[in-house]
Length: 284
Ligand code: AMP
Ligand code: ZN
Ligand code: FE
Ligand code: FE
Image (cartoon, rainbow, N blue to C red; front, side, top):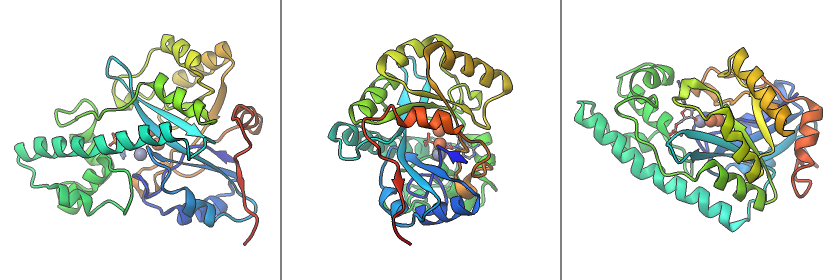
């Protein structure tokens, strides 16, 4: 079973990469992608813990924003982590997440919540990409709410008055950077209306022109109608279709392997990278 979208505590997942790899073995996965938000910082630890029977696809979920302000998540997989332009792009987004967090905290403080940047940083692992889930964890630690789900539903969702976007590249720019680094680009949960406004089916033409390789179709946030529409878009543009859990450890309900990618689709996807970069364990 192939799961091409998961998070560790190098972003807003709650498992270490080592725990994630162990759980992937236990769940019977044969291939797992590690796709922390805007970073490759967890790659080394994940590789270190790999054992035979599980293949590792290294990647990142790149935050993007369209010119009209719609948030898009682009999975970059199998790219060269040394590519400087891609590294710089991810670093810029991580920097912007810090200023953005200060703004969200200021809005919450103005509304009477007693919460500080230090409280949020206390929830963040060393070297991890900062995100709203860490703020959610801080609000939970302070007793304001009980779960990330509850915090997002009440104060942190994208249409909330407390919501602030962070600078991110457009989907086209992110795709171009992933492709220039030899990787493949798969648009994540594109029709998930839980996250605010979503892109129109027409916008895929421009993503394909930029080099888009695949569409994450099978994801818990997609309805049957969403999936049907995306399967149609994939067929129209000869794109790969994937499925994945978007596992975040205890941070979300999503369970490893709850959605997966067909082996033939994964082969098509891998063949679009400029090198064989799937990591296979050689020891342990
Ligand atoms: P950010 O990257 O800071 O904009 O925060 C977005 C992250 O929050 C995404 O990775 C989502 O997985 C996570 N998220 C969004 N909604 C929820 C929710 N209802 N419960 C838990 N996590 C969520
Ligand atoms: Zn996340
Ligand atoms: Fe996402
Ligand atoms: Fe994700």
